[in-house]
Image 1 (tube, rainbow, N blue to C red):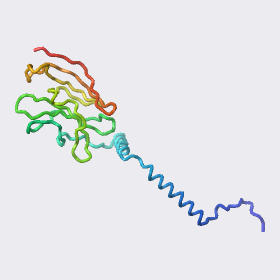
Image 2: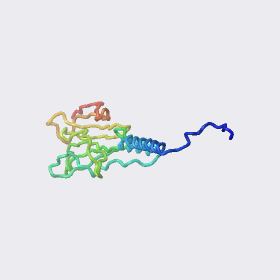
Image 3: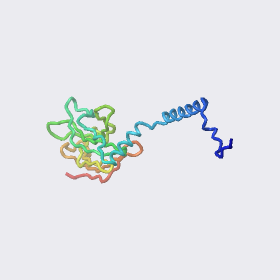
Image 4: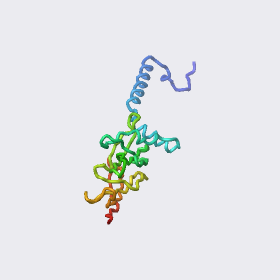
Length: 193
């Protein structure tokens, strides 16, 4: 018999110990993969961003008509006067900003400005109050653009000023920074009677 010119291929012979080691290694890989699953919320945010990049529609903005606003109207209804949508916190999902006031037969009651997001259920939820009705403000121009909320606020310099005729005006902007809405003020004017 002639010796083979090929190298000895002893490692090609299988034994029960070989199969046991292979099975243990595969089990370890599967277990490690199970432990290293991505955060489901991060995955959803990534999905929304990818969907937006590829032209598929992201989740719609919350509808303010289904929200419960922290507004005391003394048993009367409230009215959503204005609304605008945009991605304020950069997560790829739109928020809705709503200007809301108590329904009144006459006059202009003070308004609140609220930020809504999609709740875990079907109803949207209020996540921030930008203007509280207790501040006795009315809202003029109002926009959401490039991640910022901008508004013109009308107010009163004293209790002697008739509620029909605000004598102060202020332009303000809110941006999401560091986990909160930060307000910056533009021009403020006092109007003479």
